[in-house]
Length: 363
Ligand code: G3I
Image 1 (cartoon, helix red, strand yellow):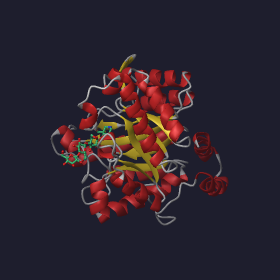
Image 2 (tube, protein in one colour; image 1 turned 90 degrees about the vertical axis):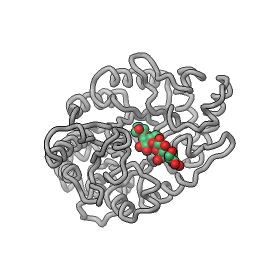
Image 3 (cartoon, protein in one colour; image 1 turned 120 degrees about the vertical axis):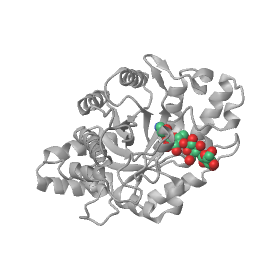
Image 4 (cartoon, protein in one colour; image 1 turned 180 degrees about the horizontal axis):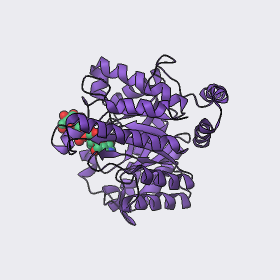
């Protein structure tokens, strides 16, 4: 899956238009990135399919259940979804001997019914943990068994249905150090490779990712993530890619050349890259709201442009898609408009720049 999709992306860029059509038809058969919107419609989904990348959004279960406009735009514009919260440890494993797949199943069923790929998020993180797990002093052996059972139960439940798992989320603390989480402190640093090996055994066909924020371009965190995944590969750990979360702002936009260099060095390790959680805050920028939305559109444009040029960047996922449902205002403590559709599902400048980037990618 990894090589074929990267090859198809590369061929996309170097073939004549007619050959491209032929390849596109073949590619559709081979990697079956389907388009639910009508063929020929100018949508992110249709244009992304032509470029052999996935374009996705994190899904709020509340919005999916209650808002028909949400469902309509989601299926029209995207061919990949990430459950925003309902596959995390706490909601899916609320008691030691009880799992609750109800909400996650709804998203998986919806995605399959609309020919959308699914990113599983996330198996091992230091947040969204249930009280039964955090309020007990476990031995190393006990916690290893708890984590092993969690991963096997959840990954096996969705075996064959999840395109890629965020196996480990936000574990890198800094240069040569892991974040001091319950997993790291009780099990030790080998919890990382154990988790990847268990996930691979539970579903050998799922792509397995390390996902993190703040390491998208170049710098200390980016170098630490690079060293972290390089070490895993040297131990023959089954890791297939790195998720760059891309939670950004117009105040400190990412440098396209740095992100491109980082993605390139991950490609040289043989790793795929997904942009996994992009949103762009504008509350802390300068200018009128209109000016700030234009700056926001440039950040989205730059990052999708970098991804399209990189053969190993195969998915571009935003963390939600409408300003009506976003985590950012709660996080920053004030209103913000970080996504590509407004609260009434009208396309914003960022949507139009993404369409433009996808439409002109082969020029
Ligand atoms: O579902 C409960 C609800 O029953 C309860 O009444 C309510 C009030 O306590 O809480 C609800 O759970 C909340 C959950 O979102 C669902 O809305 C949690 O408190 C809240 O902490 C949780 O926040 C999520 C956060 O991760 C922590 O899991 C955000 O929505 C989500 O956008 C955010 O996403 C993370 C990625 O998973 C990893 N990368 C960073 C990103 C932003 O933090």
